[in-house]
Length: 424
Image (cartoon, rainbow, N blue to C red; front, top):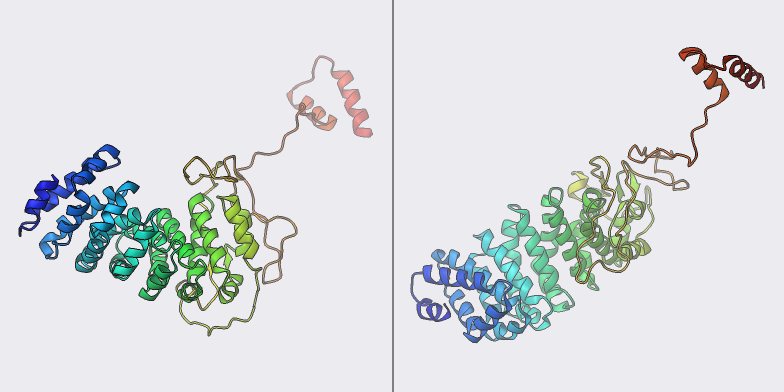
């Protein structure tokens, strides 16, 4: 396969490159022995070389297969040095510039290949940032973010891995407009796709980690309201969304203007901090981190930005956001836990969670902005309390039951006892 790819990759017909790369991807998919054989056959060098020859419009299919092959090869950490030497980072950047804005499939596969290359490899992260892959990815993302939530989820995951512990990539992607694009993606698809909300919150959390310019960009783009909306829509039933949304709130709160924005947000009639404390599921440590920095609700507080006349849901950066949580009946009795390597993380909720059918509010909580205490939520899903012993009926009820169903054999004694009890 690799020899055929090397011989025919320079021909004008991209069908051979398409078929060979697809076969390489299927042969090496999570198969360590085949991946090592492909490395020995110099597939890490020939696949990027063939990929960089698919500049014409006819080479879109071959570009998709080549990106899939690169992602499969990068799954094994031992092959990443060979892929770097084979110019895989430059090949992904070139394909994104040629076909990223015109093909959503190319953007998705390129994002997946970037994820595999950047995972646990800071050298690939740095090289992708130097060759210009970050702006090319953002341009493809902006062209297709309204089409499919899968594109948003894959690109957000790639962004999260590109900026992880890499300030240079944080600056490059922030200047390219990734902050605004991620917020638009979560607004468009967050209500219908929990995976999209999960990955977008992760990208927001990593993009603004210890990076003040990105904190400012995300705050002005409306990330505070978008993350609160994600918690309102999926935070009660999806542990992944709740965990990464809490992490995003924690990182965003380290910028004072964002903290003021978060202080004006209410979710389902409750302040954001109170809603996160009592309604969000997921990792306890991430939740506690968010609660430690989230500000208290400030009704009628001074807002430093001019008021907006448009819909508040589209201008969370300028006006307070009022979300309404999606309560689809009772929440499941067991909260799902996000999968981690080695089992559930320490402190994760693995037992039964409290099932709520509304906005639960404990006694002693602050009153609402109008001055009246919000009504307590009913819990029709909770079982009624019951005692351990038998049910004891009072004498008056026993007497009434005897008169309706007929007197028992010792009716005079029962009647006398009932009269004495009634007199007492």
